[in-house]
Image 1: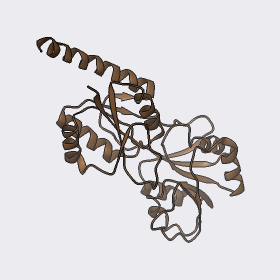
Image 2: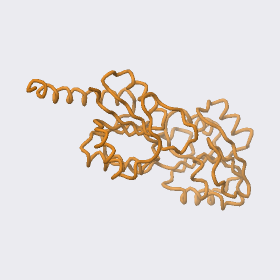
Image 3: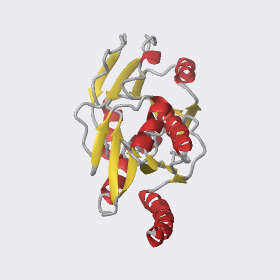
Image 4: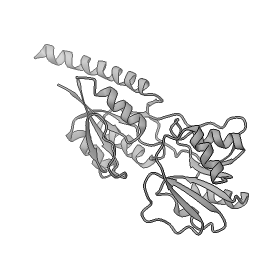
Amino acid sequence: MKERILILGGTTEAYVLAEALAAHDDLRVTNSLAGRTTDPRLPAGETRIGGFGGPEGLTDYLREQRIRAVFDVTHPFAASMGWNAYQACHAAHVPLLRLERPAWIPEAGDRWDQVEGWDEAVNTLIQNRPQRVLLAVGRQELVPFAGLDDIWFLIRAVTPPDPMPEFPLAELLLSRGPFDLDSERKLLDDHDIDTIVCKNSGGVATSAKLIAARERGIRVIMRQRPQRPETPLATSVEGALNWLETRKEKWRCEREPAQAAG
C-alpha cells in the first residue's frame, strides 16, 4: 500500500522534491498548484490545480485522501497558504514540513533598504527620489507604485498584469528566470537603472540582479518575508527527504504490530 504525500508547490524546490519522491515505489505523490500561472509546467506525480477552500477545505482534503505527510514548498511570500497548511495539518493530525530556500543576506557593498511592506517601499522611493527603477515584485503587486508619476519604472513580470495599472512612466518587460549575471548587468546598464525594488525570495534563480546592483552601487529596496507559523523546517530537498525517512520508519513500526495481529 502506497503512502499518500501532498506537496504544496509551484516553486523550483517543489519540482525537484516531486521528482525525487517519484522514485519511491512506496509513495503516491500529489502536487497542488495555485493555478495563477497559465499553462504551468507539471511536476512529477499527480497534479491538482486550484485552492482548497481555506484551512477547513484543506483539512477535509487531507482526511478524505488519507494524506500521510504534507510538504509546504510554496513561495516564501505565500503566507496565507502557509498558515492554512499549518492549521489544516494540526486539525487532521498530519505531519507538516516547510521546505524553504534561505533568504538573501546583505553583503559588503550592498545598499539595501529593508522594508516590511509596499507602503514602506513607496515611502522609501519618495525619500530617495530615484529616476529609473527596476520593479520586480510580481504582476499582482504593482498598484502601490502606480501613483509615483515622477519615476520611470521597468516592470519585469513573467506574464502580463491583468489589469495593468496605469503608470505615467513605465515599460513592461515579460521575462522568466533564471537570469544570469551578464544579462542582469546588461539590463541595468541598458536602462540606466538606479534602484531595484524586489522581494527577498532567496535562491539563485533571481539573485544575479543583486550582484549586478552591488557592483554598480545601485540601491535595492528589499521587502522582507512575511511571518510564517513555527513548523519543522528544511532548507534543502535533501533535508526534506531525510525528514520523510524518519516518518516512513515510524509508519513501518506502526504497521508491524497490525500485521502481526492479523
